[in-house]
Length: 352
Ligand SMILES: Nc1nc2c(ncn2[C@@H]2O[C@H](COP(=O)(O)OP(=O)(O)OP(=O)(O)O)[C@@H](O)[C@H]2O)c(=O)[nH]1
Image (tube, rainbow, N blue to C red; front, side, top):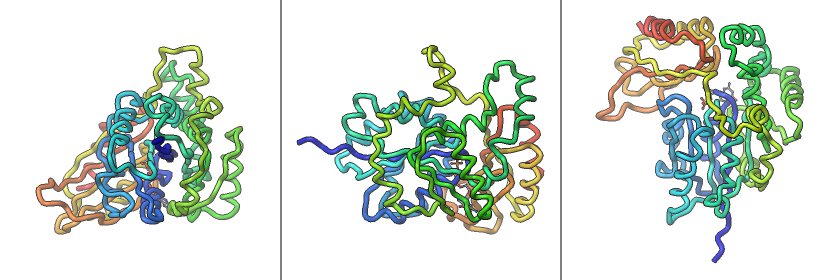
């Protein structure tokens, strides 16, 4: 009997835009669909996986959550993504829908193109590519306003042939979209939102639907079931990288423009003071994303810390498990020239 292709939704968007938050909401409102989730994260602490496993949604048990941690999914298609999909498709109990969260630094194009590989194409189709946008970051000029900085980087590095790395990636993720979710609308006013809409529209030639959301609250019926088959249209969604290297088959995409590392420090006695000091460290070093868990003495639960630019959210996420080593571990992500030793020292000092 001919099996129906399983629809797969690719969820992309820059670091901290709200992808995991939106997926968490989706899993809790999945209308009875069984969803398999493939999560790819930059930096190897597995924060997103933990957040999603912790939500206990029936739509997606821990077994249905697969983490790809060997770098950005767009660079590990052959080694990581295809074998993972093949294994998932061999399962007896196949999911109704597959959701793939790319890392915030991933180019979605190579991932979508992978759905044309013969072993995948016969069994799965890309239902749609959903690009989540941090509206507050766009309104603040995060993706447009760093020309001085890029010029400075270019002086240091002759090989930097791009515009701003942030701007390019932002556009590439928008270019791949079938649906754009303008998230974090709670952080801006109506005029700001209008600006964000115009700014996003000005960066793409295709005209995908744009919707607004806060805390990633988008109905499952809106996110799933777009029915696009985006893999067949991938030639019309070329990234800057595709366009620059069209005749250059040897050229690999990489993430040299970004750097990530994990900082481990001691227990944090005063979380409020720690977070305030972290804000200063983030601003001074222009850290794009910082997230992880902190050990607060006397507390049975671990503190989840999520920073996107200067905004930091924190909450006690779950109890430390027996046998788990308590500790404070944070992933730091920035542009390639961030000062790792200085940041390590500053975060350690902030925890003291
Ligand atoms: N104020 C506000 N915060 C939000 C909203 N959506 C997400 N956040 C917060 O933004 C932070 C980042 O959200 P995530 O869902 O982890 O973002 P992400 O895109 O998965 O991040 P990466 O996987 O690191 O790229 C978290 O602290 C969220 O609670 C929103 O609509 N409004």
